[in-house]
Image 1 (cartoon, rainbow over the protein chains, first blue to last red):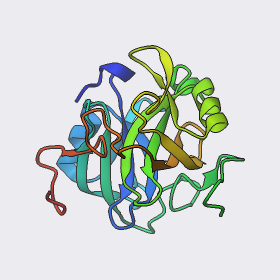
Image 2 (tube, one colour):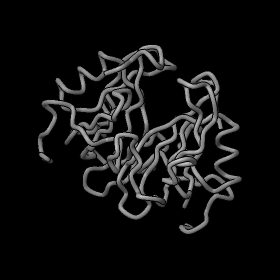
Image 3 (tube, chains in turn cyan, orange):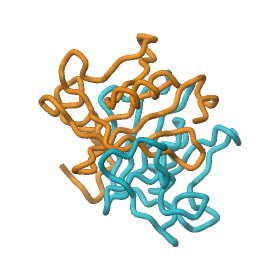
Image 4 (cartoon, rainbow over the protein chains, first blue to last red):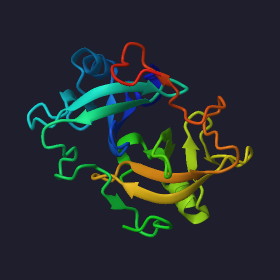
Length: 111
Length: 111
């Protein structure tokens, strides 16, 4: 992986393996990706807390890795996951972090 | 949107609105997002070329915006798009930039 473009980090897109819903985007450093692979649970690097953290380690809402894909230039990963615990990925209690539309962009899929 | 965490940029996840396939991840600055909304076609900021570019402007493989979602902390967007042109999003000629697995991670979805 190429960690040079974002000072040691790469974006990690989390997608529900069953529904294909995009659940969240986090960042990983080399250590977080290694821990993700070692444990089988999505582990990120928190930019605000400057530390590695396993998603759901305290809440139980872990993300079990089904498959990891890499993009064409090796600077982004896509994790297909199974949602554990209550299945809510966002800290707000929503299933996905992407629960809002950008105002004025709804052209075909109003909700 | 909060552009402060990545020096003026936010990740933009591109998802096929019809199939839910994640096609690529790019970056946008304020200007690229504004241009995306103004034109209705995904427009990014190239970190390597330090310039704004509309995806497919020369190839014709534009990404027509169907919907833009924002994540819970306003630092990432998810664009649901319709693929135009020949429908190949990756510069390698693949439909998606995520056409490879990270070796050793295929637990349930071999391909």
